[in-house]
Structures are given as structure tokens and as C-alpha cells.
Length: 402
Image (cartoon, rainbow, N blue to C red):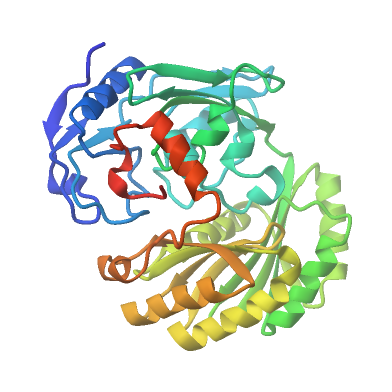
């Protein structure tokens, strides 16, 4: 095997202010695997990079010897539209993939706040957005994966059809691993037809308890929204429901949902609907504040909203988008580093929320809090798995989560 050509790292390649010594851009899976093998033999601290949209997620590295970019892994795209599956190279962006799928009226139902998010990066971080309510995370849509490992092997798991039991499910293991097990070469997903019609209900509240009651009403009903979201900005709340199906089904569900809600609502379609959801996923990432992800039990939403009001007394107004049907949210906290650290501590000390992870933070905040939080009960098992795949411990340069 031949390793990829190298170039010197530059300031544009820096991660948390640390400039890598070298950058590699392999052209295929074999080059990628050879590059990782050479790095393992030399015990070079290595970071895998896709579109670079989430390089700030993780602990600050002490040093980075090598960044391995998937920017040249873009030549593989196979759309089996009759089977509703597709295989894509890791360096292709989600936007590129969905543009190609749309030519046959299909899509990969994942939404991201980042235009340049790549297939490999989305899997490695298990990044998801509002349509997670209906379709789950990337882990749930993945049916096959090819990985390049630090021992120089290229391995495959799963297959090209939905009903497949070929090999151990490495795709599930790689999803959310943040590049600590190996590098994703390509991935195969199950797809969905693009809905014939869609409409979004947008309701405004000045009372979090009223919003929580309406969420419980919708949750207990026969309605089937594609996205079911809470939006919070300071003291203003919104409830947003996206319905997508046939025109008749969408119309019927919108009418039923509006009768169910305790507050007046507007209905958006077309360009205005598209713009609303685009802003919805991106605004928590606007500004310069810390961005925190956490989860909760959906049935305890009213208590969580009350707790967030306490959080705002500590850290000032927040912006938050929450998947109320599954119990997951992303919150932006402005203010100084001390206030941000206090918010993180408040969330982690609460029995109402869990899995509190600081996704975006200034270096000063990362010095005060561990972005991943205390290790969970499965930390030992996860560390043992990592050692199996990366015995030299080179991958992700100590940035975590393990």
C-alpha cells in the first residue's frame, strides 16, 4: 500500500489553535489505510477531517502530528434508486448527495446546520436535526460502511440492501465515535421518497408551561409530524410541527393539530417554510457563545423548561432548539466564560437532563470544564473497544470522547 502524499500544516489547518505538522489527503481507501498505518507505527497524534465543520468539538489537543483529510474521497456515489439505497464516499457533502438523490425523487433524511458537513463527518459525530423525530439519527439510517483502520486494513460491514446481516455492525459502532476507531471510507444508507407536500405549523407562546401542555397533547394524539420542535429565545417560546406526506394527509393533519393547540398558529409552505427550518437549525450556532447539547425524558418537558428559566438567571438569555418528541436539545449560551461554566455545571448537576456535552466553546471555557463531562458507566468497555481498533492510541489526538 502507498500512503497519501503529505504537505506541511498551515494556520488554516489549526484545531483549537494547534497547527498540525502535516496534512495528508488520500485519494482512496487503500491510501487512507496506509496513511493511518504509517501514523500508528510512528505514534503520530492524528485527527481525521471531513468538511471541518465540527473540528472545534472535543478537548483541546496538546499537539497534532497529522491531519488526514477526506477532501479527495468524493469519486464514489452509487444510487440504487429501485432499492432505495445509496453508497457515498466519505468526503461528499450531505448537500451534494441529496442533490443527486433528488433527480430520482429520493432523499437521505438527515438535516445539518452546516452546509459543508460531509457524509463521513455526519456519521462520525452522529449529527442530526429536526427530522430525527421521524427518521432517527444517521446511525439509524446506515446499513453498510467501509472503514480504514490504524493497522492498515480496509474492512467492510453491512451491505447494499436494507435486509442484510453481513458481518458485525461496525457502522453502529463507528457512528458517534468521533474518529477514535478508524476512518470512514464510504457509507451506504437507506433512503426515502421525497414527500409530495409539506406544511409547518408555527405557534408562539409566552408561557413555557402552556407550550409543554400542548406538546403532551400532540404526543398523545395520532398525529405523525416529521419534525416536532420547541424553540426558545430568551422568554419567547415557539412550537413548530412539520407535516410531510400526500397533500390530503398534510392538510388533514395540519387542521387537526391547529385545533389541538391552545395558542393561535400560522401555517407555512413553500419558500417561507424552507427558510424557517433553515434558520431553526442554524441560529443556535450563530453568535460566539458556547453551544451545549443535552437530553431529557420527553415526559418531563415542563420541568426542563422551568430549569432552563433558572439557567437563564445564571447565564443570561439563551437560544435553544429542542426535539421535544425525543428529548434532545442544542442551546447557545452567551455571556462571559464564568457564566457559561456555571450553566454547564447547573445542567450537569440536574436530575432532569443528561448527556450534557459542550460542543462549541472558547479555549478558556475548555480549560474550566471537560467538554464531555464525567465518564459514564460504560467508559471502561468503550475504552477497551478503542484499544482493540487503535492500540497505539493515535486517533483524534486525545480530543475524546474516549
